[in-house]
Length: 154
Image (tube, rainbow, N blue to C red; front, top):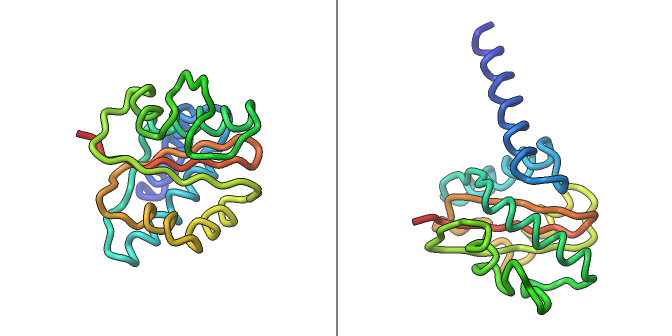
């Protein structure tokens, strides 16, 4: 009984933390599902698990919001870019002190499973997901514009 209560508490705490860190884009349940899918794929391919990072979440959510607000779809933000043009600049602007950084974006997928499948079917995106260098992840979503950021801090 204690382990069931502890598991429920940890799940609720994780969902609350993820929701608070991300803003309005991705729900705690969706974030938890994506982290689970990513970590399952990484485990099957010999890479260690990722954890969520609030600063990467903020950078990812900001990029999805910017793409939606200014009607573009690119890894490079349109000028002027108050959060930075590239993913590294955006991560730094969000306060993430990184030694390695990568980003996946997607447009049109309506579910976590659909966006994950799309990324895994793309060589470059799959490479980011499975890269053992990365230890942390953030996710942003506005409508069906998704941003997934990977990082390794100093």
